[in-house]
Image 1: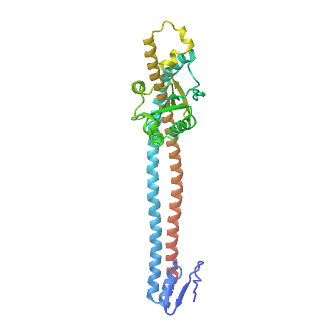
Image 2: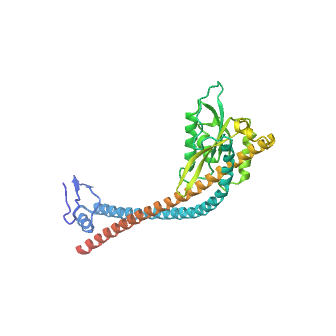
Image 3: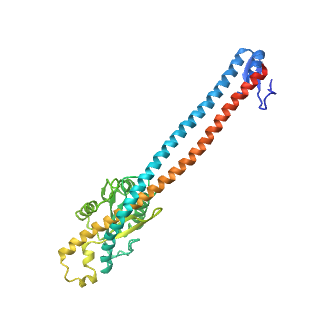
Length: 342
């Protein structure tokens, strides 16, 4: 048969069959336990006491879980705020150094513009390859070893993959991967295109010495490229950057320009030295642009993470207060019900 507790708005049913007692629901108050003890014996009364204790423990366990999670989110918020402050300081330094480094990049490109060798800096020149042998192209990807800076590194890798997919029939590409992030993105699917890789980038501000080492490594490699491109993130503002491409020129490409006849007094050795130096100039400029873009993006990412952590803390605090109030209300109902029966 079914029994209903009229003192509570909730429905409680108990089934009694051939002397065996079976609890259908699991929430009863103090009056129910005393009444059930008289009607059905001490076993069912003890069962109800156990069910109530389980509910109390469940409420306290939920409060403990919320409290642990709330503490964890607060600790994460402290970390993100600290990282934001560090990134802000590094960004200010990177922006100051970028102003001086832009002279190197603009100066190198100005010479190539004067002789008519410079190609558009936003995309490689599209040409139809008529010879049987593919043109050799070098693509330098500039990232860093550190993450937590949004999509700065993935944007460079994505553009490189697009070029390798769309221009594979036109030229034979080789990759120079600067930074562990570029290596992690390109090493698996395009390992056969990798010429060499560099790490320990981004932990300290890039210097001209770093660019010179990379340039010397490129020039001393066995791969003699016809065209080269540097793929990097160009800094625009604190909240924006643009993935851009600037060209690199070999000595042969410079000498073959028709307007080079205007510079009759330039010795060949001087031209070789300048070609090597201009490569280091362009790499240094691209490294500085990428460093400023990375620090600004990391500062923005940590600011967003701190705000999201604050919103999560507010939600968890509200959930904690509601759960605690529910536990207190349930205990008060049991105490009041017991006092009313006495």
